[in-house]
Length: 326
Image (cartoon, rainbow, N blue to C red):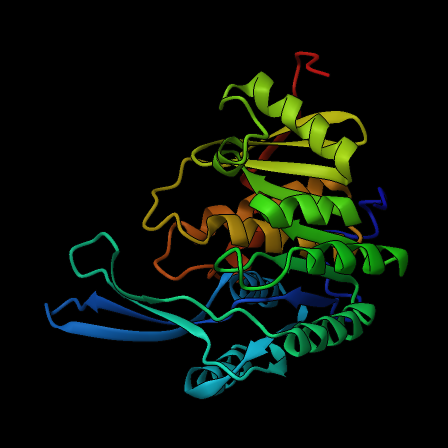
């Protein structure tokens, strides 16, 4: 990534809007029941799924976002309209089945799942159409961002390997936020930046524990497998990153959390926006961490105001780890 910070800064609007392609294999229709200030119930209907949440934050950060995913049935038609209203361009791939959906009740503070309908497994023709549409949209992008599926059998893992390999061969930087089988497939294809949570690394058996040395060892392994750079989010603890052989620590101010869900997707969007804008890696870490920090102060997943995020970057501390863990 370019290192001339005098020419390109986090809030630089002198260039045309950067174009982001977002791979969203499992767009969801979400319904959340909230308690209104007067004690009555409120119903909130929104798009969901990791790909959409990443795309929404990327759009908030000023990117021209193009989202590609399968849409079908009543829920699919509603989703396309709702996502377009968010200022995101949808490249819909027709599916014979309805999209997945859920209903959550959060009137007591914690989310309680009322209904959770998993997305269907795509047919061979639908998978081919999804790949072709994604490759086409990705070739026109400044950065490609790959979100994970809502369930493991939504799409074959080789779709991630082929998409990463083809976009990388076309010199489109790929940012991936994945875990499980799709993570391994993406690494096989090669990614410019992998963002992953420490919980997922431990669950996948890629990190022995949440000990810092174990996580740093995991980053080096992920780099050897195909990730040029790696960022690991660690919940309330400082994130860590590996880039060009250097290990970094990223600390955000201790803001009060209203809802932690969506913080990781917001961080991924911030990192991708920085890559598309040509910022250096330190500023990419600042923007990603700031987007995640602002998100937890709100109830909406992957939401926030761009001005607040850009101001928050000034309070994010990025430093090299003193101890040599390599």
